[in-house]
Image (cartoon, rainbow, N blue to C red; front, side, top):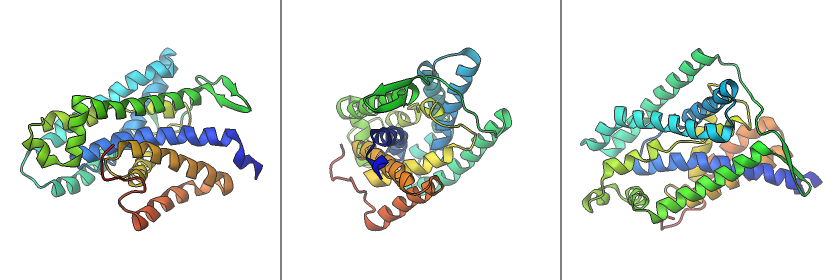
Length: 290
């Protein structure tokens, strides 16, 4: 049991937790501002992962630089979805409850289309590539450079987004929209401009591509994880969502270490169900948005 106290296991948990927190942050913003159940969220992560893979394979571009292109592509895809499919519905007279229900079906179809087009273009075979694979030793812990970069970038991006939402005018408008959509319109917030922002927020799928296998069907598990993190942290609690990602990373990593890798999904879904039953408002939810 001594391995449970090892720094190696703790660092692995922090890395996967930081990735979960960043992925969930984007979904939290989309659902919080527009009440859209974006179950294709993980497929945008997959697009970013493939972008990083092909830029490195074909042009030897570092994943750190490829992340910018991957984020831009994911952002453009999200913007196209918003302006092409949801803008008219969100600015129309339909009740938000109906839009929310319809979005589940629309995003399900979008997810299937993205997955199958990707499989048609690149085959369904999983792919991996080695980049930034130099080992960095910190005390008794050895970490691949790619994982260290992933940890630093995820934590840095998450902190930057939270600070942006807390101190910038656009960020404050987004938080207001999450709290009360109708009141935001009344006080003069440009709701159309504000709710487009979360969709164009690029995702760092490239970071996932250098830490695990990528495939056309890798996105759905990350969508589920993002929803679990949101449930843990509480809807709209952005800082809490990042902390919840860390908590889930710890539960998954140590749970798998104690049991088996085959039980990874059981652990994630088990946490999801327990929180929904015992504390549906979220473990880390507070009255005031932070």
